[in-house]
Image (cartoon, rainbow, N blue to C red; front, side, top):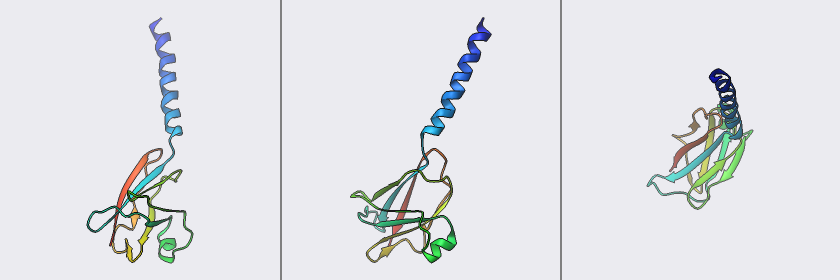
Length: 116
């Protein structure tokens, strides 16, 4: 009798885990700071899939602008690394922090970039 009760429970638990992974989209929360550590409102962020697109500044995957806290959230991204350009007035992220590592699938990924 115990064996019969355990099997449905295991199947239910497995289904719940698989369903939970499918509920969450891969997303990225990006925080933009200046070289003094202050958040940067109104910075434009562009994400690119390849280094060639990044260097040519073509084929932007997604683009957005940071909020009052210097934060920008991208939703429904593919779980892969991205190249980024972040600009605000005469500040940008060139010379460091141009690539975001592999995003974890179904997770709320976070990154911080410094512009100077």
